[in-house]
Structure formats: C-alpha cells, structure tokens
Amino acid sequence: MHPDRSSANRFPLTVDVVLRAAGWQPGRWDIKQAEYWADTLSAHTSPAGHQHVIFPAAVEAWAEFGGLHITPSGPGTRLAPAVLDLDPLHGLHMARTLGDLGRALDTEVCPLGQEIAAAADTGEPQALLAIDAGGRVYGLDHSGDWYLGPDLDQALGALISGTEPQRLTTG
Image (tube, rainbow, N blue to C red; front, side, top):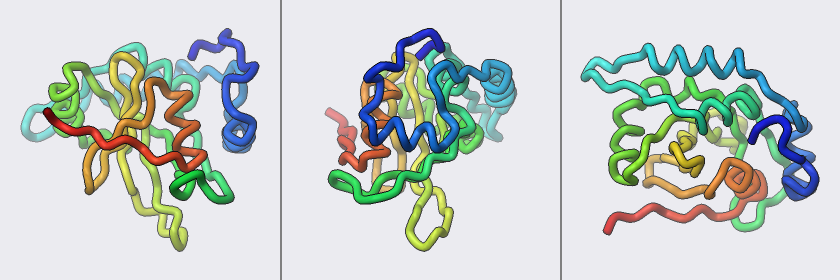
C-alpha cells in the first residue's frame, strides 16, 4: 500500500468512487499523522499494564487511509455497506482485547478504526477494525471476531460493498 503502487484496477469502480468521495486518492500518504498515531498508541498503557504493539503494516495503512470517514450509499451485496471512521485511536483502550486476538492468531494486532452504525444516524460504534502484522484485517464486535480480508484493499472493498464477513472460530 505504498504511494507508488499502481492504482489501475486496484479497487472495483464502486469502491474507488466511495473512497475518493471520502478523500482518498492514489498516492495519499500522510506519514506524519501515522507517526503521531503510532506514538500515541505506543505510549498508552492500560491500568492492567497492556500496551499496543506497532508494526509497519499498521503504520502504512494509517498513512494511506487514516483519517478517512467513509460513507457508502446504496444497497450492499449481502449486508448494508459499512460506514467507517479510520482513526486508530478508536482502539486506544483496546490493547488487551487486541493482544488477546493476536495471541489467538499467533500474530500482533493493531487498531485501524471503527465501523459506525448508520441506522438513524446514531453514530454509535458498531465494530472495532484491526490489522495484523501480515496486513490481514479483522472486525471485533459484541457478537464475535470477524475476518474481513487478507489485506486492507480487500477488506475495504468488502466493507464498502456489504460483503458478509467470515467469523473467526477456535479449533
């Protein structure tokens, strides 16, 4: 997801239009903001001593997509398209939860942002979005943990188009 990556056919047209309407464009790269988020997350320690682990896949995702408020319109494929706020500080107080998920998946996990309930414009958080050290993306909500895609591009495509996620299971 580096800025010199070709954007030709990177996203389906409908996803590309939604991302551009939110302020994304090929070459978007705000490393200064990404470093601010990295510093803020790494400096936070929960009352129980849990800390975030920062890794390149998260910083790169924040540099390219961080700060976007994505509001798709129209019907989704299987679900309503997700309204997203890609600010990793929504996960600031979730270091233990993300650490637990990382241990279960044998990787490190960092926050990406959140999905917001669009119904009646409540703006209520619906799910925490997270990325692992390999670039895979997950959603964590009250009903469980979900696999959203092998990379952020595919996860954004699935969330914006309303594709049903895959539930993570143990065993």
